[in-house]
Image (cartoon, rainbow, N blue to C red):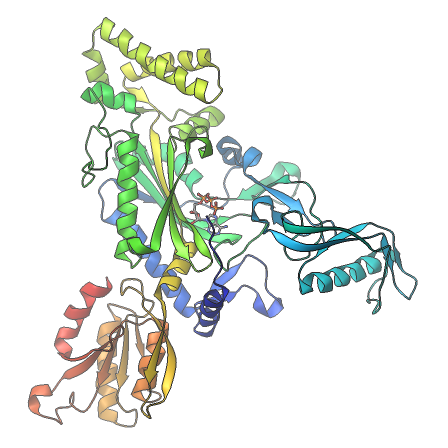
Length: 596
Ligand code: ATP
């Protein structure tokens, strides 16, 4: 999936983000902490706007989705039921010299000479009797190797502090020349050990005793809280399946190799929807058959005879439309449709929406059809029923005669048995489960299935920044060519919507008018008032912050160039530099629809 790296562009984005206050390294004054990032003033606004657009699209604009705001720490039983305690692991490999870990599938191929040393010694007499195998591929490998060996010497000597400045390596042996090998740590060059699973959940203790019985986890995804609260939401919200519950919130994963800036962090925010639907069997009883998806299927409005496949495609379409609405058009996206052998055993389908990041085309959001796996797991582990009752289903099933019910049950058993066989599971058990499931259906009861569009807010912010980043060459007032950066954010997500300036700061009438315009606009949208520097500089500063509009109060505004221009301002557009005269009274009506 990864494509060749364009490091320079990424470096430019990282440096702009720091310079303009979008993203800072967490705890920077203490040297930072790997995999954690803070959002500065502009970044915080950008994220807030993204959250708002998502929330609006997913729940406020819909009648069939409601929101949830659950805790980060939940009962550990939730993570046992969801499978995270036992299987939420990445395979990782450890550098034999530095103990640094890397995800087994993230080791970049390297070439060079493999050297083996039998040990090392310092002139002070400290000795290290250990075989050290290292790939001398990059210059930094040699440096980091020597540095680490010096540290190991200090450790083995039990010295409290200090570093031997000289180092003698023993028994050097050239053992191989490798090409494209994935057996060496990409940063240190040290030989990697075998792949071992590493659970990604961050642990903590709840309560004062801090024993193993008090272990709790920081949630690795927001989704499980939605499943755990499913029944409460059904009972309190008057929603009926099909309907969804969405949530935005922090998630934590102890990623083995956080990388690509904020793309893979250890603390991040997710925006997830669990959309609950009836199993296809319910649709068959209610409507005779399930609508079949095709390339030309009409997905514009949900229909009662949709099964999981139509719903899955529908949500893909909705999500792509959402991205287009905030400036990520089809040309910037790609898709990865998981093949049957890539899917989790319970999943029916999964499509990843990918974004063309500067470092490669990578996942922005996953949309999975997860069957009834999650609710059924919680039903099993909590002992609390997660079934819903559907009166229409019971009525429709009641109208089937015995023969029709038997035929229906037999066909469901055949389907379930075939699926079990495909997944290497016992067919008999599948048939028994199918029969029990049908008996429940005839009474109007079932555990809903789910379609899950799951997006990362930080990845989205990074995608928005990368898509917005443009460089322009422009002549300044003296005709000198200047390179300038413009962030072409969609006005809906731009951190600052309007910059408001008096043409000159030493003209009290201009300042007073500009302040008045600013006070009016700022009640409706995020504005920035600026009176320092020449007007071209102020425009450039706002271009770099991605502000789509600037309003300048000038002498025309004061009526000095004719009464017809009194109380008009210059409205300047970021992307084409166009300037127009607009009445102050018309500003809000003009800008508001574009930024909301
Ligand atoms: P990946 O394969 O990239 O690790 P995933 O398939 O494990 O991601 P999901 O568990 O499906 O990801 O999580 C849903 C979304 O949450 C992802 O599409 C992504 O946008 C976001 N996300 C997941 N892990 C991280 C992370 N470490 N940092 C930032 N965002 C993340």
